[in-house]
Length: 200
Image 1 (tube, rainbow, N blue to C red):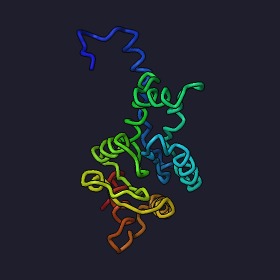
Image 2: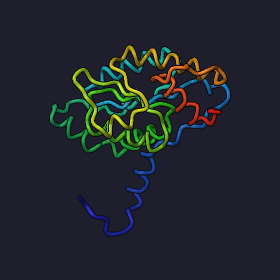
Image 3: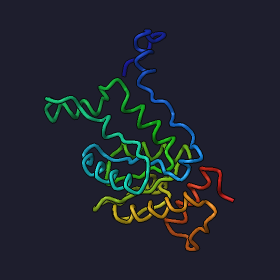
Image 4: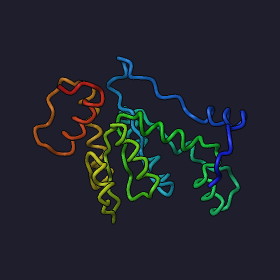
């Protein structure tokens, strides 16, 4: 780890500032019903995450998509691609985008089984009060901290899509009654409405 020996050079400061995305604008009245979603998943699930995000977009959700940014330059070997991803050779822009997305989304969805980076993203979201919907991987048993950080957990993408479809309906009409049963949908709806300041 390099230690700083003084102020950063102007070029480094400018690069870091340019790499930090602006926070998404607050919800305008017209788009208040639209859910903004970030999917936290491993780079090895990139294709699956893209397909899942298409389904979410078809439900009317706005997607904060890391898969477009996390694209190594062409011509790298698999090992070089891994180094590129692990060190964020894009000037810190992938990390900055993902960090900000986790803190500003309406909902973060954990796409399991994923590694430590997705776990950190879940932690960032939880710390910012963003509800987290976890999708367990086929052979995954989330540990104590990851499981506890999730607002609700499901076992399949299909279940997650059904929940998001219902959440979208509730977001359109915040006065609609919440489900009586204290299940995943109610927990997510309460967390979402509380985040938007609409929970009575």
